[in-house]
Image 1 (cartoon, rainbow, N blue to C red):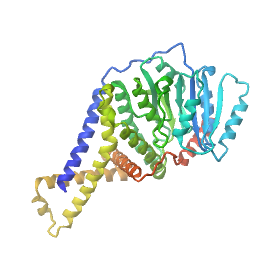
Image 2 (image 1 turned 90 degrees about the vertical axis):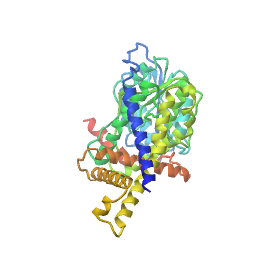
Image 3 (image 1 turned 90 degrees about the horizontal axis):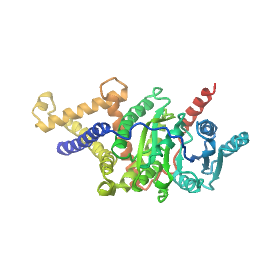
Image 4 (image 1 turned 180 degrees about the horizontal axis):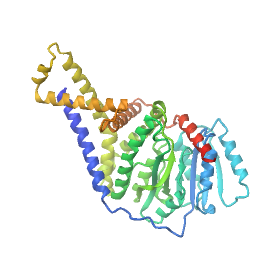
Length: 417
C-alpha cells in the first residue's frame, strides 16, 4: 500500500513540478508585445445564448449597447433555448425602446426546444451576418469591461491570431469561502493561460468572453453534447493554423458561486467539458505539425485526466494506511519508530496533507492550506466529471446556477444608482 501511495504521490508531484516550471519558463518569453491601436475596426457578431435569463438580460444588452465601438459594425444575436420565463419579452421591449437606433443590428433566434449551449452557438455562428469577420460569444451572466470589443478587433488585425479570450474578475471574491477559493484557483489559471499564450496558444477559453476569427473556425462545428464550447472553438482555430490567446488585460466581470452547492453545479459541468475536450484532442500531443502546442496539450491532459486519478488514489491509500497503522494492537510511539523508512515517510506525508486540507477547510491561516484545499477539491471535481462520463451522464444541458443570477441582478441594480 505504501509503495502504491508513493508512486501516486510522485506522479502528482512530477506533473505539478513540470507545470510550474513550464509556467515560469514560458512566462519569460517575449510574447506578442504591446497591442497596437488600429484605426480600422472589424465587423463583429456578438452571440448571447439565453435560457430563462429574465433577471440579467436587460443589463447585458445595456452593456453591449454602451461599448465604445461603431454601432454599424455590431450585430447582436440573442439565441434563446426555449425559455419559459419573460426573457424574450424583455429583449423585444428593450429593442423597441431603442427603435431610433437603426445602426445597431439586433436579431432574436428562437429555438423550439432546449438542446444545450453548444447547439445554440453552432446555429448562431452559422446564421451570423456574412460581413462579420469576428464571431464572439458572451454569457448573459457576465459583464464586459469598457473597450473590450475594441481590444478584440485590434487583436484580429494580427494575421496569426484566430481566437482571443479575456480574464475573469470576480465581483464577490471576498464574500464567501467558496468565492475566495475560486479566486485562488483563478490566479493560477491566469498565470498558466498567459504563459501558454506566450509560447503558442491556450486550449482553455472563457465562454463569458471569447472571440474567434470567422475564417479560423468556418470548417469546424461544435460537438453539441460535449460542453466546453469555448475551448472547442479555440482548439479548432489552432487546427486551422492560427493562434488562440489569452489577454489578461481584457477583463470581464462575474459572480463566483456564493455557496458550496452552486459551486459544485458550475464546476462539475465545466470539468466534464474539459475532460472530454482533452481526451478528444489527445492525438495533438504527438502530432508534430502542432509544434510547441503539443507540450501545452500534454501538460493540460496530465492535469485534467491523469493527476485527478492519482490524487484520489493517493489520498485513499494514505487514509487507509493511517487507519491500518493505528488499528495495530501494538500501536505506540515506539512501534512507529520501528517502521520501515518508506512507511515512516508516507505517514509523515499523510499527516502533512491532512493538516493542510484541514486548515484550509477550517479557515485556519496555515501556509498553503487554502491553496491545497482548492487544488484537492478541483481534482475531486475532475474525478467526478470522469465518473459521470463513464456512466453516460452528460451535462451539456446545463443546470442554471440561480444564486449567481440573483447576486448579479442585485449588483446591476446597485450599479445604476
